Amino acid sequence: MSGPNPLNERLRFAEFVLDRLPNGRCRAHVGLTWKESEQFSGENEGLGSQAGELRCAAQACVEALTQAVQGDMSFELLGVKAVRAFDATVIIVSLAVQVDGAGHRVVGSYLTESDTARGSALAVLNATNRILGNRLFMR
Image (cartoon, rainbow, N blue to C red; front, side, top):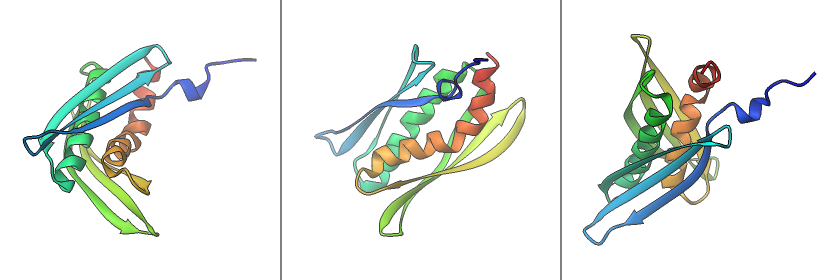
């Protein structure tokens, strides 16, 4: 008996680009895929500082997620922080999610050795994957 492959039923992180601009700002691009055929992308521009790059990348992922859910839910990035722990950097994000008129807060994290901006986008995806899995699967 074969059913849908659950590995194909969740959004996948497909692309990440962070450009540091000459004006002291940064621009992040995040690409997500679903079922290997649908693609969603988000972009955001922010301050070129370490904290600014984390927020910029996380917000770009939020934009891609918003495109993926087609208005079924809404997301607001509340915060993003890099914490040194376990001989690595842990990126933690906090999001407000609106689903069917009810508000939820979700937290996601990602352990990284080097690319903290990319890690902040992945932490957003980790925070929302459980909620999104059920929504996207029902489409």
